[in-house]
Length: 157
Length: 144
Image (cartoon, rainbow over all chains, first blue to last red; front, top):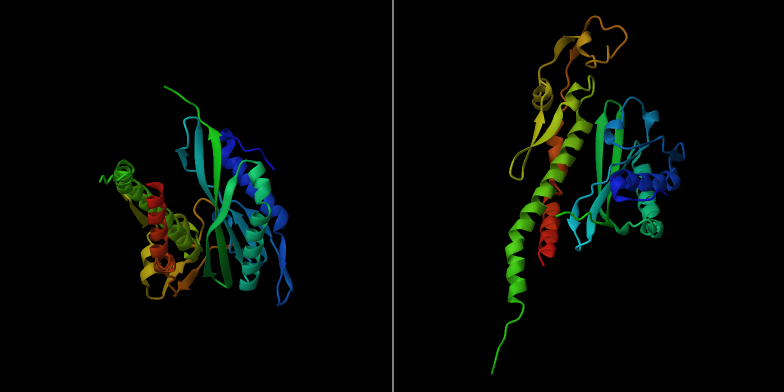
């Protein structure tokens, strides 16, 4: 886990989610051949998803967190952040199972995130999509998590 | 008998802040919605050259008004359809990255258009009402 500071807010929050997901979400069992699917790539943006071959899938994308801020108290700033995590798979059952694994990984390790200062982590929304590129049919599942982080404000007059 | 209504200051503060919060909340949700449409359109766009996919972008064009642009000239034909016609194979190249195929000689017939903006919009529109509802709810809560 990476310490979260206000100077490395985006990168350190992303790293923590990335490490947790990479650690916990690796493969799932499915009922059809080949019996299981293993994440091939952990990416940071959907633009890294290439449709050149089915063997590139499944791809797990941990997007950059959004960190809008508001003044909380005289000396503290509150970050009402969100982070989107998506999985791209060629099998819908695998996509569903990966989404469950993602949600479970975040839910189970809320305590570890809280130790780093990320509080009130909640699943805010989930979505699904399906796109076809040539012969490759891709099932997309995504979850958006909300979190809160506080840091000391720099005061200036 | 004395009747005193308490909390009017708090209430008027809430009402004063409501339009501001609502405006901000709706604006943020609109941006997020258009971002999702853009992403969805990019995933659906034909990728022979990647030029079309890369040309899809969203810009703020007014107060709380976001517009999706497709700069690539063949975007409109993919979206609206075209008659089958031959094109030089060398056109299937990735700009700045060399030929898409090893021997870019000859002609190839393109016959199938792939709409990408409308399906992306349709997919995301189904959740727009719910998203705006949530944004309004958050704005009202923020105004308390």
